[in-house]
Length: 510
Image (tube, rainbow, N blue to C red; front, side, top):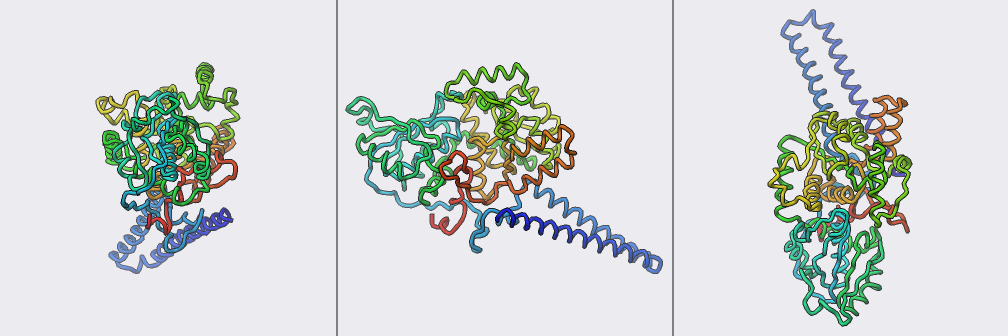
């Protein structure tokens, strides 16, 4: 129903625009025909006035068309697309603003125990997990210890929580809802049995699970350690208060350290000084390719190297992977070569300012050739900041990723080539800040179009038309999350689209 209505709306808009253009051109043609009959009888000065009027009209119309095209390239057509997903009451139809946080008095509650958590994964996987765990602590009326970050994953980043996030702000900004402390009180360092009870909570659990399964253990043992935190809280079916609090932790409590924040702001200012910029989250690092088994465009030697790496890490469960089938199913990150084609088809020209938000591209000298030959203004943080500025962050992948996060959130356009944790969390943050343009690539559709174009089955013009048509409604605009009962991995991720926090009457009273 929504799709049919959206199609009709777009058709009416196109028809209206074409009708307007046609009417204008007819009017211009009529004026020009009239001029032919009047030229011989009008004085020379009158002829000049007529010609100036016609030329000015054509020039203004051309400028208007160019400005409209430029605006659509860099900004989402928000008001036009608002009804495509859902319609709010009229009084709130344009209430696309972040939550207005109001500082409330410190919350008093009986402490039910102490919650310790160990986050796992990269920066953005841990970021989402922290938000979930703080929300659970609030819900259970327990005291939370500042989270421990993952130091044993592939990235082996030794950073502590306070090396990445402003720990004092984190604690104080949440004081009215939940008590957070830096260390477990000494008297609890050892229990009667000599160890602290530790377990991984069940993935995608709702508030009832934590209230009936986790809370009794907290009351019994006084201290509980949750040793796995990724995707341990459901996307949907939670009380609105908890969903709103997840956003509060994510967008208000979790602020980066002043050093990271300062470098991020410097990067953004440098980029903005040269005009609009696009952030390309090019997920084409070695670990991504080894983990996913996506080797399209790789040499036999590179494929063997990536396969060897995949088998070397036991926690990467999937070992035997059909790379080409996975690519056709849209489950692989786009290659740099494929990305160059898509950006060009979307209308971005050679001079477009592109910031690459990524780690080291696998065999980048060879694989980035197509992108660099298509776009002449590609930069990375390593090109904009001095070695001295970056030195404290070297070998700290999460701190480096934090810089890319800040630039990605602030960019005019954000385009991820794979829907990993950073892509999703940044998408949600950009929605929260006013639905900033985020182009969500349909990789399955694009791979089919690219293969047809490269085989000669599609002309360039047809390819461009198909790419643009496919993504005209994939711009990070207002939309409710898709819910899939009993399949939480397949439904829309809460942190990619926290729509409960984005608008509506409840926002003003939060």
